[in-house]
Image (cartoon, rainbow, N blue to C red; front, side, top):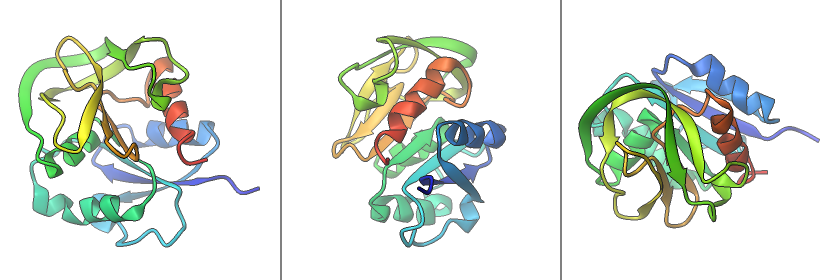
Length: 187
């Protein structure tokens, strides 16, 4: 039986290799494209889309328009990691705010009733490398995890298809287990 395929959109992350390796460790094949090369349609080839972090600010809606169009029409589960979540949130009308620089492991509380968190405890330690934070979930989304500096540490669309994480889940064991929860959505 073929492995599920995940399209990883590289928004300029420093950890593309690690992100792809995590999904491959969890039994998914991955293909990576940069944001400028995102396809207009998936054509049944991919069972999920993952948006990497970014060094570019998520406010550039024109730059990310083809990506947002794909995400909204693809009909497959989507996971935005750090800047990937911010791109999704800004496209939905969310606002980002500057906050303290966080690098390294930080604790967050998660809503255990969410399938995404099936393999973790109510408090997780996840890796951060950023200074921008989503202060509230945009319309059509809700916060499903929070931390001291991030009231929206994790995000889920109301229909349960789109998820986001402020943290870089490609690092740390709790991150791997949250990604394992995501893979349950497309297997």
